[in-house]
Length: 302
Picture: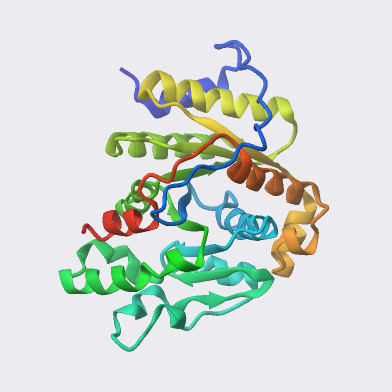
């Protein structure tokens, strides 16, 4: 039997194998999110490979959600990359792992960046979060709990791929946004994330975001290919939360280290991200199952 990645590649190459998927439905609006009282929504943003715009989306999504009145904190869990710093044109001298120092408080590591973006740099030490002693886990847990008092939504920017540290983050979160592009290698790697995620979570909640698309037929093709393959081989239902058109203003914003939501809010890509934020806030009803504290318990094996 051919492996599933090979099947996915064949689906990408043979566009006539399956009928055209239905048109992407507009996100329903004006439906209030129902959240339990256990803390902010915790959303992991991940990708199958690097270079697909995952961190760029995270930063701009935080700004878009802030424009909607939401308090947002980014946890930069992309080990050692510090891409949030780069995109914001900032530099962090402290990381989340500094909280293991008894004299360091959450306020010491919570960075108030430009454009209203608050974030915590994870640093390379987060890769070994599951190996901490019981006392260290308790210290991190007790200090990080306070994030629940300062945020409505916590965005966890994970690394790319299917390494154990990445899977730990996405399984610990109640919601997962998987970023891909139309490139065949990106689709194959995105499918690998779906496969790994579906095997180790009991209640999958994964939504797709397609970046750098050219037109609507391309969007339908990408979403149809991934959703059909996931349903057929993984019995995993995958919904598309939104898409971002290829836009030269996005490229310009990255080079200038000014997020497109702030520097070029009328750009096509910025309007796409605003639509994704609207879908998260006003789209179909979502319950926060375990919230931020539940995320920490699972991540630190408490």
